[in-house]
Image 1 (cartoon, rainbow, N blue to C red):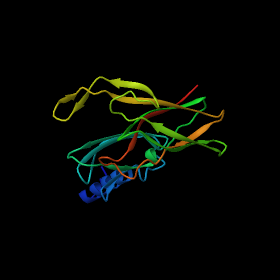
Image 2 (cartoon, helix red, strand yellow; image 1 turned 45 degrees about the vertical axis):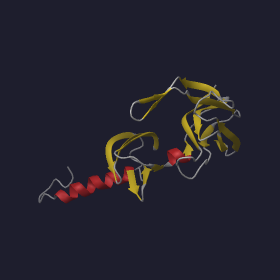
Image 3 (cartoon, one colour; image 1 turned 90 degrees about the vertical axis):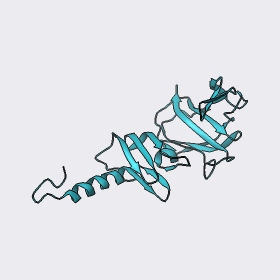
Length: 204
């Protein structure tokens, strides 16, 4: 325990644990900020059960001071806005011939300018495009996952396929240090086109 000395002060324990939680997660102004002030002494770790303003329970894991997994469980309906380096640019390193994406679009096909940053400081920009997830498979990507139906709220089943697509981008023969993802839309809302990226990997 913190402040485990005479005279015992419970407020020191509460204050210290609150400060640690704030280093890992901010929840102000209706937004969640993941790992806003991670100490350099904690380059890797995992936490679960963090409660936020607005009614969310958050768990996360990180490695090399970068979030690798974020799990958010909401207690109520609504939009959850999340910020963090994980979503601004993917810290993906390595060499290979192809940069592969598993992703899909909503409210129509989506596309935007992305970039690969190499160790020598050069940038390779490209247009990342994804077909819409609903129905299909559609042209513009290779269907990697196709479900026969969709499960909807209220245990309703809709017999329309849903698709996740694979798109590959040719790489230069250099060390990749970062991938900058496209800025498709300013917010998530009904009718607003959005790109959902589920996985990124470098292939030989």
